Image 1 (cartoon, rainbow, N blue to C red):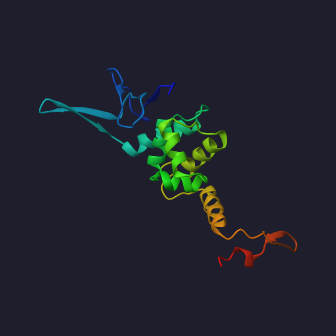
Image 2 (cartoon, helix red, strand yellow; image 1 turned 180 degrees about the horizontal axis):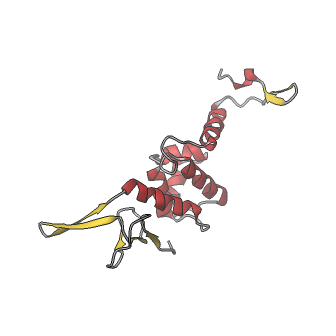
Amino acid sequence: MNELLTFKRHGEPETTGKPLHYTMSGLDDVYLFNGFEIETIDGEEYITVHDLDGLWKAIGLHLVRTRKMLAPKEIKFLRHHMNLTQAELAGRMRVTDQTVARWEKGTTELSGPADTMLRALFLDSEIAQPEGAQQRIGELVKEIVEQDELDAKPAMFEHGRKWKQSKRELQVA
């Protein structure tokens, strides 16, 4: 990861000290300027992040909106915060779970289309959306996956005033 991720909560002043190097995200270069407290209990320092879900959302949105290819740790971060296993992400992206594992290990580079699809899946995930709001893309991805599971029959279309797929073709045998 070449770029430093720095976060400041809206409406909070910056801390007067140096920023906190936040490694709990699994990413190497995340720094917090505010939105956290450091407490010392029995000689050990404990960090409390005020809005952890909000921080993870901000990190994820930053990653998917940046124009560089996603790094292995960033891929794992996005998958983890979408609450998906490697196999579940693989199913949605139409690749094998081993492919996802290789992306996360850095042994295989994410292709351009796969990079775009992962970003779109994250943007459609619950973590990236306002509470209760889901975009149409999730429904479309689900339809594509379900269609893949149907027998490989030729598609049948009917023409009335508009072209439409025949209902009998959409039923699972």
